[in-house]
Length: 386
Image 1 (tube, rainbow, N blue to C red):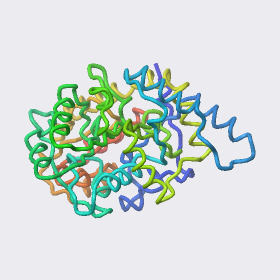
Image 2: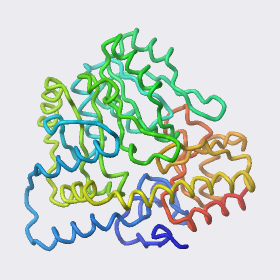
Image 3: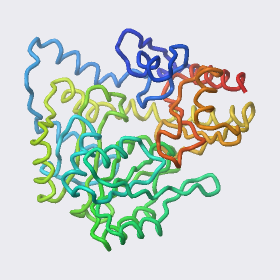
Image 4: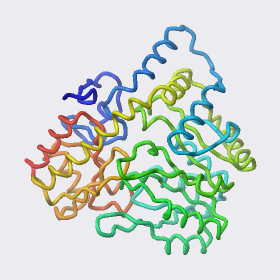
């Protein structure tokens, strides 16, 4: 039977970065765009209804965040992840990336080191280097087709003086959902060396059967040195509405972050972002429960197709997110050649792995958040080009 997620919605003419920005990014509009991390699915009906109702009021002025918005997030985190938080811990911002920059500036000094674990979401790099901090790279290890954290490397970097770490959980782009044991070890090292961690958990709701996301802060009863970034943007496909939350249990750290927010006038007062944020968490759960199996089926479809028709490309089994990490090293191409092959020959637009750091060399990131016919057409193009 056809799914609601099989319905193709034209996005041309909406100023979509994914579609109307592909020419600038790939040098061609003749590619199936499966790159930037938003989905080609309609947002939950609860969100579109709430936005229509808000749009019907003709004044779009500065807007407060009502208590009901905080209640919606608190209830969602409790129900979906078993995590109890308080309203006063929540700081709102236009997105997770501004929060990354603010946290690095608040909790490190110029030239101090910040740990990240590549291959990883590329704004992690600029969040460290733009304000004049040093990257302390602790690359993930690919062992038997599954990525692992290098705890010895992490402890060495902390012993050498790193006092801040940005953790990606679930991990973009490799699709790992870290286990409790893995996260406990990260906390042990952080406690030992006095390291503050910002855990980017923006993909926390997008987890496949057999795996479970654990909020890092929930493992140790909300320790003061753990900050957690969450948002409805990836879960409910509303990233363009620009509202996220940073959960900061420690009052001193909240003040330090507020000072940075105020310095750069970082605010979160758009009426549509506020409306969508609350509506998604209050009314989007049924939609999410239909989305997750669709994504899981697409993930498995991609793996089966590549195994049969393009075995030199090996997808790393994704445990979460709608992003697949494709190991293309057997193709024997340089990173520049890989990008040209997929754009010019296959006419499929993906993110080159090298953009996620040197550890991503030889890989590509595929966004499967699209109707399955589109994914199938992209795979047919790749197989044909090979």
